[in-house]
Length: 127
Ligand SMILES: [Zn+2]
Image (tube, rainbow, N blue to C red; front, side, top):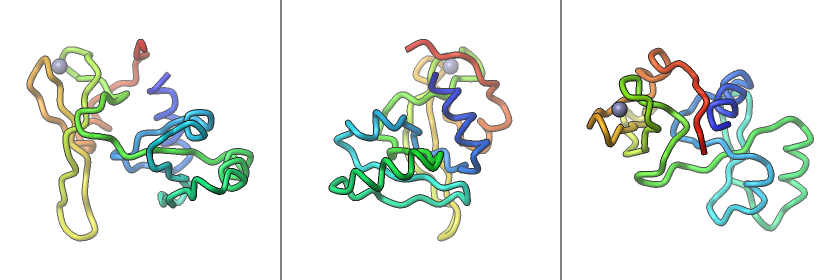
């Protein structure tokens, strides 16, 4: 399911892979900071006092996300062993450019998002 949501999010136009997509229901229940994601590849922090905002974004076909926590399991799969990768850190290239790094605990492999987009074929993740 995670990968399906990722694919839909990419098709929608949002590509920052340091953001973990979550469903509307998960956004409503989340105790983390929730972001409203937009098809022009921007996001805005949701004011959790304003449930109407969340609903309007959902009804408008919008997506939701939370920033990955350290060592949180992602929907991305290791290209070698197929295990879900965990988030490790954000690597800053310069002031305007950064990418998320994920790691496979089994292979001890660290992979950047840009590598993953090309190498990882979407597969179903059991959860
Ligand atoms: Zn692996």
